[in-house]
Image 1 (cartoon, protein in one colour):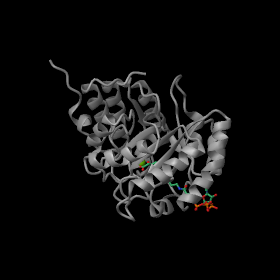
Image 2 (cartoon, helix red, strand yellow):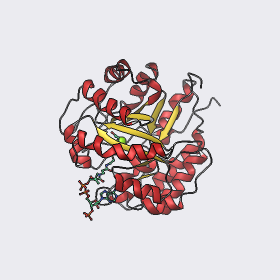
Image 3 (cartoon, helix red, strand yellow):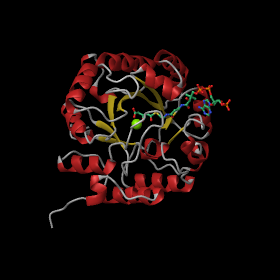
Image 4 (cartoon, protein in one colour):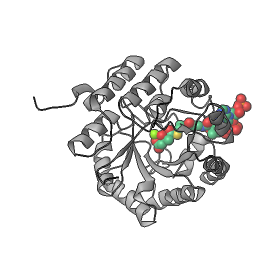
Length: 301
Ligand code: HMG
Ligand code: MG
């Protein structure tokens, strides 16, 4: 792998859609997944096996995963909050999972009704089972840059939770700016602390929400620190029902444009990706709000 290689981890079908109020037909979600793979994305977070009452939009997870036509070389991770979720994911044919907790107690309680310590205990058997089966696994640390309930979150709290996820044995940790409050200086502070604690850059991903327009600046700061995996949502949709004010994720098309211009390699074709972005827009019945979704790419005529 060259230092210019970046992994783009697509979260549109899960984070992007989970907070949409109008039910989206499973067929439209499957089409979205297919278009994302067409664009060259190789890691696509497909859905969540959470309590349907908690996230009604993804209540079709079992049906969706059973019907999903897997492409060779594409990983389709799913969110799993507990053993019940793992059993459903297993029955539906998943083979890559994400557990999710946070750096703030208040958000963890609101999101999954557990303390941080309880969440780690709940994930232990889930991650152990995934490892026994040779599945890929990821752990999320949400509210790493600020919490909608508690306010500022210190980097020591992020490092503490990330370390516990490393000890569980997840392959990767995604550091979430759940409500999009972080700046490049915050990225240097938080990522610097994670690296300083001995967590290798190649085990870290950054998950920026673009609520305040800082996501791309934050990506650039993280790239300079050696981070090479970024979460993004095609069409720029996204938000968490338990994080008031969590607007769209960093848009995959905006990320791809920036990486292309900076000569980074990632395997995603922007024009094909925009087809997927326009599919999201049509499905949701509203125009694309992303910069590159509106302007398109740019080539010297
Ligand atoms: P709870 O109410 O404390 O747990 O929920 P419970 O065990 O009492 O279960 C309540 C009901 O849910 C029961 O059903 C269970 O059977 C059922 P009832 O008896 O009421 O009919 N249940 C389930 N059903 C299906 N699948 C399951 C499951 N588990 C329980 N897996 C729980 C605790 C964790 C289940 C719930 O709070 C939950 O599902 N939360 C998920 C919230 C969520 O998905 N949030 C969004 C994802 S996180 C995010 O977006 C942030 C991220 O993008 C990164 C970032 O931006 O920072 C990842
Ligand atoms: Mg998110």
